[in-house]
Image (tube, rainbow, N blue to C red; front, side):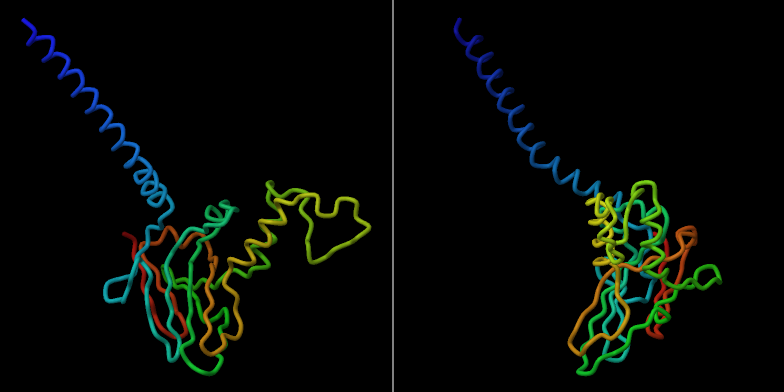
Length: 210
């Protein structure tokens, strides 16, 4: 006579525990799913071509004393609008030699569909940022006029300006044992190509769409 209520109680408790376990598991898995989806949304569709030494979608290549790591990567700074206007590349160069090496903008050109694309100068990127609707009323921090009543009225704009400078790859001398890294921005039309190659310090590095 008592067996049925006890059985029902055990079933209810078991079912409740199962739901709790399921919710616990979901709470553990959901952040990971969100993280993976976020990464998938921001990941670029180009990977190193076959025959290119690569790791984590970085193309790895040596040029004399330099070790280069290059991959297509969305700009991860606050000013995300850049990803819609330009084609970003992230590059890291390590000088394993003892003497400095000059890195010029002409050392990192892209060939896509038979056309050559050189890195867009930082000055133009900053001007684009300055003239965007988001940064209306932005003032150049390097051209300070103390008499201007509107000086530095847009702190957020200032932060975006400095952040972009800090995250962009800087050309010039790379000292022995030193490393430089940062973004380079190219013409957005490259994204429509099925493949492209980078002439990096005289070395040809191919990329293809996934």
